[in-house]
Length: 390
Image (cartoon, rainbow, N blue to C red; front, side, top):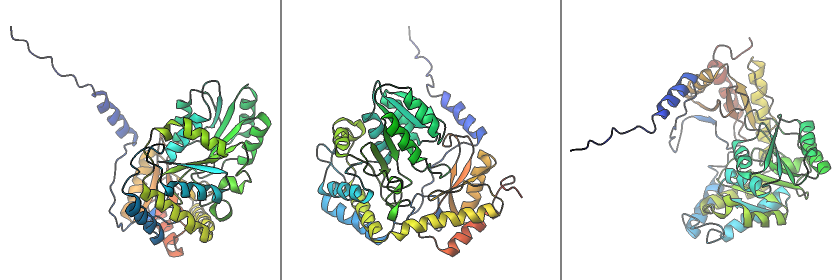
């Protein structure tokens, strides 16, 4: 007897309902390829110092690709470490005030490496509730006991650390990517010293913007190079390239080389990205005023937007976060800005831990006064109902 095959089952049918739910909530995300040369003014990227297209940075990438090839060819422990990687690690550590550095393929990988390799079963990891997703994922993968504390709550950090016997780590962003506010690093560091805990700080939004000549938030706080402090960072923001790094005591870096899975089992950072980051770092060393200019632009954007009735968080670095009435309103606002010639970031749940949707503006050091005025005018003109208090 002829057997009919069973009706195929749509094993991914559940995705349809998930998509409909996202549409109803105004949370659909789409990829939007941009041309090499865009007519839009850029307040959406993380190019804080305007170095991505700087001739010296591009030349650094080209020289590296011509000499070392298009890829690293393997993991850092096999064939993926070049002389260029070693030079970047030496100069990055010296610039930021740490003993040693380790370059990885992304800032995300750097956070996974630091959190997982410095914790493990029996360790307590205390995490600020506002931390980046890469830190959250590092905590989940660490197999440690996790204590999430209220955003910026030093007392909660101290109490949580005091209740644990054994190894402990406090991990926090230096500048939080949603509102652009700075972590209480001095308070966190004191709590760690008193309770015998390590402090791991993601300085992705501090490098190139805070500290003397852009040396970062830890340098500004006098914590760079201290024995119990480790920094992670990305090379894709102020340095205009790609990749990540972990900085700290030399023995910590040696430990990561031997134990951090996101380093050991990942292909090394491509030579072009390594060369671009090194060129940008050297350029920043020669032009330290770029860091102060990025902060100045942020203050100007914040001052003019709030003076006109918009609600924004006071920026501690180069992120200016402007609140929107809803997720759908934020999406429409960003689209209207784009149609008017301005590219802005749009943060909606789940990217925002407090559930409040925002426009996220990047205060770039290379923006002129006229460009700042034009950006403010577009944002105000396209603001949705309920965005202002006037």
